Image (cartoon, rainbow, N blue to C red; front, side):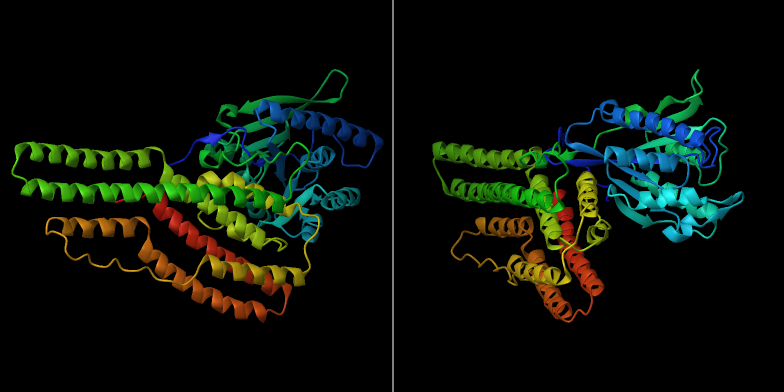
Length: 492
């Protein structure tokens, strides 16, 4: 996500659309004195500790002052010990979870460390059952380092980078290792990430008890949406998470309408600014020809009034953020359209997230990714091909190949007004991006024509999915380029 955005940073609360709060997790493999043996005692102790952890998780929404529109998504590995208890707690709560692994699942479950195998047979069976749980929406291999320690460190850093909040469950005597919980706590402190540290102890009856330690809790900020999206009718998350299609349709329909209104305001303001300056020049020309002091005074007052009104309109346009709001809502409408076009293609939205979107849209994009990952089934490849072909047809309608008409020279105007008219025409053309749009639409038209043939000749679902992601990345990339120009410029 791009971090350069400096405008439209206010957020509506609660947000009109559900937003995911990513809670990362790391913890000790060895939990206090709990034995790895599959005994009645160890299972009972583990169950008590899991119940204590689940109670802390249930307190999170209130502790973080989350609204009913926020839902928690867990991020973790699935090692023995704390990771397993965290995953079982999320399974009980039916909160979505994304699993990041340092290596493929089969290798991960059969890996060995300095003290022997990572998973005993009963632990491996327990983990396999959790991998197949319906609450797990993603299983991704993110570790690519050479050594075992490097892979675990890379995975932990990925979890930290994706998290709004980090939870660490550790035993008092747990040693600090590269890629371990203690190192992750230190990195979180460097990055300023809020941390809920849970230290395992025992109560008077010998049962596990947790000591709660918050670090930088005041730095937590609930994900929100830009104020420009506050007009979207609320899509409630209290009765369960919406589908990715419902989310995208609500986003597209409402932001498209709002973007149209804002564009109309911008067009009107641009015409007023340039028109008042041109008309003021005509008045100035008239004042030069007037011979009566009264007429001259009146014309000067009119000229100053026109110039003042044009300046006021210009400042008002900037102050109200109309240009940035138009750019942002149009970009959101394009995101909604893109998500609908890619509906049913696994992993496509994650590819689009590599584009430099403004930072204020990061919570929305991450939520869309989670909702897509949570889908229980995908469309058949024939349906995907049909939808993609229809999307391309629609795109041709959205991006017709046309060129702007060069403003014809106006003959018969006075010499004083002619230069001002030229400057006004240049200002309007620049404000409306006429030349850039003509060039961009022509290139996009040629690109989409080439993609039609490739889509028609695609021989596998993998090839079609890759083509779909490429097409949507190009379409959204064009809108992002336009957004970058429009969000920081206005009428010349």
